[in-house]
Image 1 (cartoon, one colour):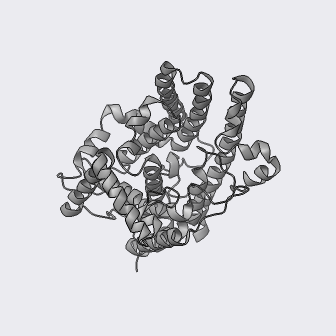
Image 2 (image 1 turned 180 degrees about the vertical axis):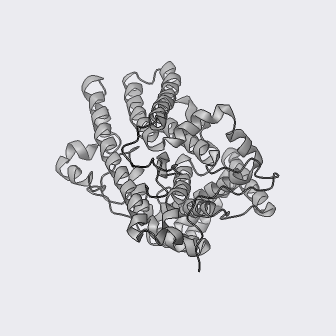
Image 3 (image 1 turned 90 degrees about the horizontal axis):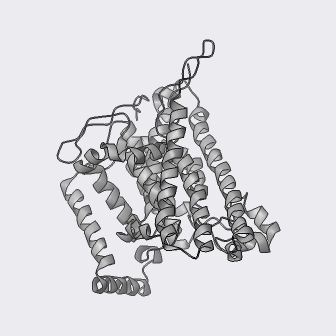
Length: 422
């Protein structure tokens, strides 16, 4: 089957009834929602603050982590799929397409190691200087101080991951395997999605996971299961790159997704309904239904979580009001954070860990629980603004080397080259 041209085409216009707005080569929704996910991840990682009650995990089965996996898949599809297309493959090798993705996976791995080292330092400082010795027993640190030799093997091999610092390893694994998904998806996105769902089902059925070390069990963010969300985003981004829609707007599907989201909200907020539905799920499990079809398990992406985030994504992708809201001035700080995703995520992680130490040292003083998250978000915006200013600063040309081409999306917000330098 012939493949499309490799150039980055504008996003297709859709009917004003559900996707109003001009056609652009960079969809502001992706940046805005990625920035919003970063804010919610940060808030959720500072337990005990009042803003936790207003993040999306309180209104549905999924949370910001599921949304972020899908958004990063979309970004990867937009950033990297062009090099795999036929026009680019005529002038470049397959390795030229794969190398940027694996290079990015290496960057994520190095960031993971750096964040882990700082997490140990921050909680150790809390124990040493802030009178909270219990900090070195939290977030899976007990092994680090009680069985150091094994932990120091587990950390660089990603077998030992600390709480709140355990999402990047799964991204790294998925980026390493993403070239296969892109190659299959270029021929049939539906086939690639079907294979992904089948693998997710088998993963939950047989409890497949990457082993942890030295602790028993496997990774909390199990990439063998979480790939279903990443691939859904990847196929969406790949289709966008071709000027298509992976799952086009259909009124029945759109309103069905809205009804499902409202039902889930009622399930969570109306106790009698929630109790009854949970009982039905329990009975189905006892009757022999695979656990990941009837449970809200996060490691294996339980079916309720997966359906919720996919329904939410579909509605937000096709609701005209969302396009208009994302074009407003007040969403620009979110878009800014979304464009500098990896730096902002790393900053938010370190600040959330610092916030945990401060709150434990001050016995969760009320004014601090209200103030620290706001300070953290403000600092994340500042970091993103500085990084953006530096990246946009004109560079002096060197000899006859042509300037780099306009960047496209990359996972976690960093720009990726879509065409080789001249």
